[in-house]
Length: 183
Image (cartoon, rainbow, N blue to C red):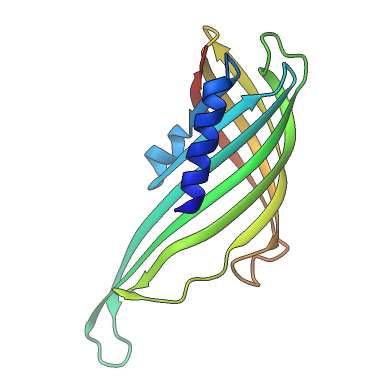
């Protein structure tokens, strides 16, 4: 809860002083494909450099049915989890036309942790959090100088992870954000 409060405060303070430098964005793909919400805010320090902070909420519920291997009775197993992802990213824009647009690249610091974890209605021990560093490369279009469309490709290397299985792994994934740049 503290993390959410700090992010909201950061966005509020930056918004009060933004004057055309603040963008609020969300990932529309996660809303449709996954049970998740990802929000981000980017503050343009100048025409070529931006600083972005984002937070994602992910929840899942999986139900498995089958038969007990010993008794042959039907079995129903439910798995539920809630997770939060937070990241901070720096962006350098190559040849911007309107400032903070077109091709960009930059480093990413990523943190992930579980808020809840249940197995068949019983809480189970949550794994630790994971921390990663990576890079983000993408392109930002400004539509009518206010609407933002930003596809990107993010590569993340986990140096501290939820499990030993993930430690040292590299994940490459697409990302899409749509949003609004405030005047």
